[in-house]
Length: 441
Image (cartoon, rainbow, N blue to C red):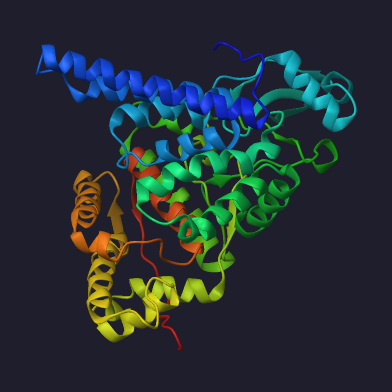
């Protein structure tokens, strides 16, 4: 893969790159409609493909929070047209890497020495590259190591990048800027945590300590003495990236085994630790030669407050779902409804979240669930489309809900989409006590 020899770090340079992508997208529309006039059978997919490629090229050159957005979108195979998902998917572990000399400069600035002075050997060519940093292989004292090195200027550009994106999000979601501020603050906070590798190390150790006894899963050992806020050193896990493994011929039994390990991993984090790996895209996992699931990135983690946990799972309790009074109180606890919400508004959100909750809890309704079931994900898409076309969505629009919903939903839907990617059937049974929580109980 062609290496990148520079990265825009100033606000002006990054804003210019965003604007340049917008100009190319506009030109693509002009070309598309010109072709459509000549040939009415011209497919929309050609426009989507051109736009997806131009947007991804711009984001991949910027790295950081800009590329992280592409990574998040690629994790949901049902949110965007396939052309975008396929174009953005390399952001998960095969984005264009920075050149060896540039990355060595970053290492020296952070660690006070060159990689070859610290390690017995260091490969200046990246093994893989993602949104925040790239991974290099090294050796020391007989250990095979993975060294994650952050791109220069990424941490400092997070706030300005989000300011560039915010106007697009406001228009897309049809909300007021002050309504989305808490959610952007939450995203910004998480991205800044992800850009602090010392924070990632602490989160990794916390989750590993709480999940190390789970079967079918393995974790690297981290080395704080060879790490910093921009450098993270861990054991090298010699497996196949999950996104690649999923595309190979694998027996269903092994797919189920890997999927079960992933499900159990999230089950433990959510229901015991109340602290979750909130970025379950395939690029953060690999399958080891013995079939175990390896977890190789803990950049994005989320603390789940007890009151939010109780309200979230109370909403999924089937006894609560069909009790209007309890549903209204639960939705108020999640700040989706307010104390002054009017009857028509209350009815719309109760019915909407009853449908959403029914879909979200469907995998829990039986002892096992087949995430390879295409119909389930078609139902999710159909409901989303129906709600978006409902005039009440505009009438009662605006940003709603606890800020904690963002990353908890990201964890669950990312988990569901990853299990769908590997076509796994897993045992999903959760004790009824999980759903028995109710506000005020």
